[in-house]
Image (tube, rainbow, N blue to C red):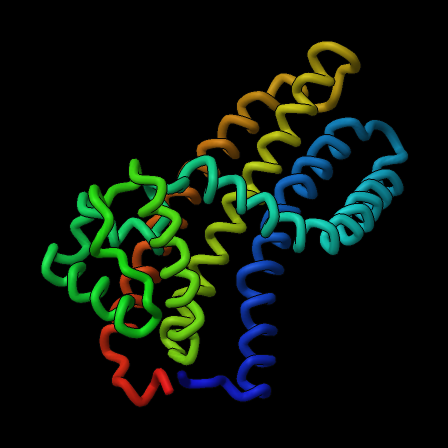
Length: 245
């Protein structure tokens, strides 16, 4: 099996950390920063405007900077539940769905060839299970094992790595926007039941808009996941025997 040298692995880890983890965290912080500044400006009156405005901005920026270090790692964990477990689950998980009978990414003959090569190279016999669908939990477990192995043996491919970064970015951004939507709805609840807030009448609308962005990001993440998964299987099928030694 082709091994990646340490320098390449470190470079890829840094690039993935920047694209798939840091960028979603930065984008997620834009919503509370803009919302906080807008609420602060609306609440500012009189001659203290030029003092309160910069103070409000610096306070929110400082809090956001502190949250960034927490969020960049938290979003990856949140994304494991949404979209992966809640939305993608077994039925839609990109890397495994391709091997189900109802998926149309490959013909049945091509999928049979993929299963045969997996059995030949890693002794995971997917052909014996019937039906080959997400409803067969034993088949799902074995396909999961095969997909994890495939991720490992195909990681040398540079284009596949780039597609993985894009998939990771959109998946984590989905989780980030979901957190933002919850945050805005919490503010809306505070405004309604506990304490009037600036822009309080608009908070529900803002929350709905962010929630719609979350749904859009989920769809884009799934599309990128399917592209990444298909590329992974294509790379695997093009690997010759020497690459497994």
